[in-house]
Length: 202
Image (cartoon, rainbow, N blue to C red; front, side, top):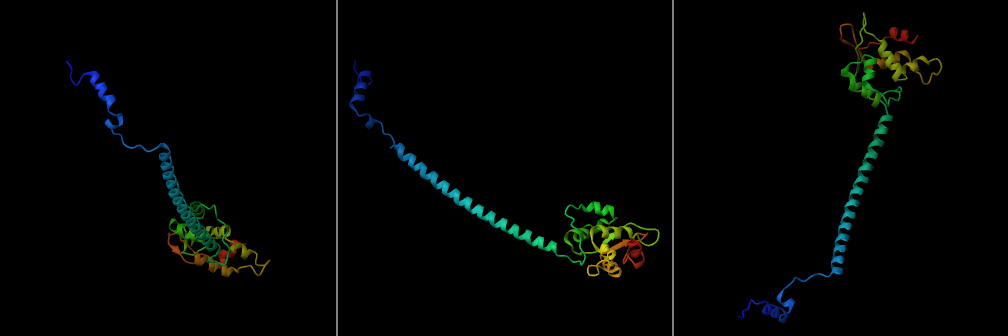
């Protein structure tokens, strides 16, 4: 009995009809064209990346230039001072240590920083060490002796007249910058006077 599903008939039909007519495949891109297309896409990506990098580098250069300008301005500001006397280089200074060594009030920390690091007067530095009578001037004068050349200028008055400060000028300068607590803890103006100042110098 012969019917259409016999193996021989199926084989004969398969041979009679062309293979590519019976099965339709999508058109394939040749390998060379695919490589060329892919390399063009890579070139475009590289070009976009180069442009992004160039813009980023330019922005970094601008930021770097601004930072350099700010640093230059800050250095110029640091060279200027509100004071006629010299404040010594205090690059590695620890303010907490200075405050502890010279009995300076915690409330004066920012003012002390402005004085020593920025050479600016932003208020009065309060010295807290008390004495039995009046105020204790020793920490004040020791502080000015170590961190400024004001006391030195007074001591060298006889040696070089041009770069000296009189005792009365030094007293006025120090009293404009400091306050000192009395035995009751009340800040007193003008803690330095000619008597205690000349005693310190001798």
